[in-house]
Amino acid sequence: MIEVIGVPFDLCGKRLGSRLGPAAIRLAGLIEAFNDLGLTIADRGDVAASNQSDESEGLRNFQPLFECTTRLRTVAREIIEAGNTPIVLGGEHTLAMGGISAALNHFAGGVGLLWIDAHADINSPGTTDTGNLHGMPIAALAGMPSGSSGVTDDQWRRLQAALVPKRNLALASTVWFGLRDVDSAERGRVASGCAITMHDIDRHGVEATVTRIDTFLRQAGVRHLWISFDVDALDPVLAPGTGTGVRGGLTYREAHLTAELIREFLDTPDCPYTLAGVDIVETNPLFDSQNDTAKMAVEWLASLFGKTILGKK
Image 1 (cartoon, rainbow, N blue to C red):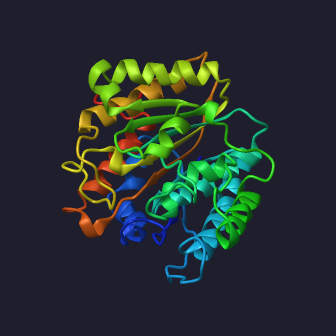
Image 2 (cartoon, rainbow, N blue to C red):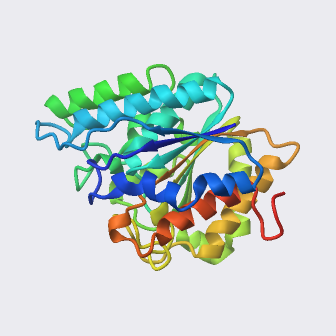
């Protein structure tokens, strides 16, 4: 069974509005699309999330983020422990920490991450230019030090103690796909994993680069794959409803071919890894046109779960 969780939270991003994303994706026909595929899907509703800004010192809006993410972690772990697959609807990308944390702490190792995003999101408090936590989730999950001091360092340690008390995310099992806006401090960090930029996709094509992902995951010993999809991986001409758009992203067909190929790899009899869970985040209806970005999100998820031009495989 697939279980859907909404997380209407957006206080740690660049622009407000992605708190409306879960509702927009549902209204774009998510449940109906999965029913059409013959899949069993249940909607668990939304995780409680405060969108009251916190002006305390340290990391901006740390406390509401901490509460929301730890609640999500609990729900996602319940779903995984029941043998089901969580789909987390955002909300901004910081919330990805909750679901990935649940997978890291449930499985006895072998967790890999596919981060489909224009941004690397591996800044830490000491390297960020913006101070926005939505640019730091991978650094937190990987157990990186804050590079800061005082209240900020204390908050960072508290977040890591709650989310990754036993097993950190291994960068050697992490793939970035669709990168095109990477900060200088992040460049050396993504080199520890597999970083596929839009230049790579332009030069070699989707099939070759997604095959590279599969090869990397196998060689890294991944057994449980979490996929985190930020809609800003798509070109903003196609998906304007995001607060973090960057020109030159994936086209409609490139995005769907990526999902279709990942599905093919997952369905290969000798595939050593299974799908642990999925995030789809940063859908912001305030900047959208006729809910097009939410529709793209639904269509992309349907492709990932088996929809093809000639029907479900």
